[in-house]
Image (cartoon, rainbow, N blue to C red; front, side):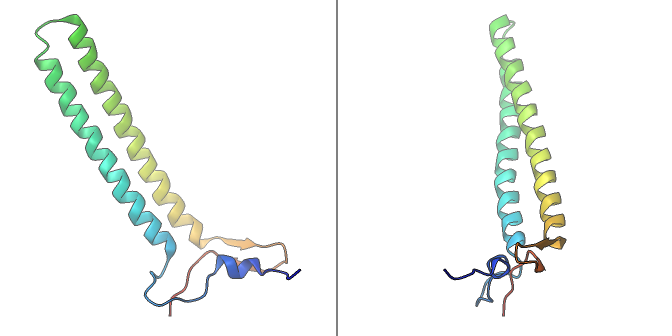
Length: 113
């Protein structure tokens, strides 16, 4: 059975037209997704506020509106924390050297010609 070079799998061969770093691509995609989630959370916050204003004193409607606002704020906080975590990990991870079982070390990067 052929011994696979794990470092070659981590550092792929150069490709034509690929981004300089795959972590940058992942960061961009995750930021777009988290941006959409943040927009949805803000829209739900506004909807909850409008529901609260038009509740007309009905305690059930007020409770539902408050829950909408509460869940929207929780969603917004989770979205912001996710963005911070993803950006921090993607900033730190490419600068780390790893050791594969055959004893060689290398950085986790992709290269382009």
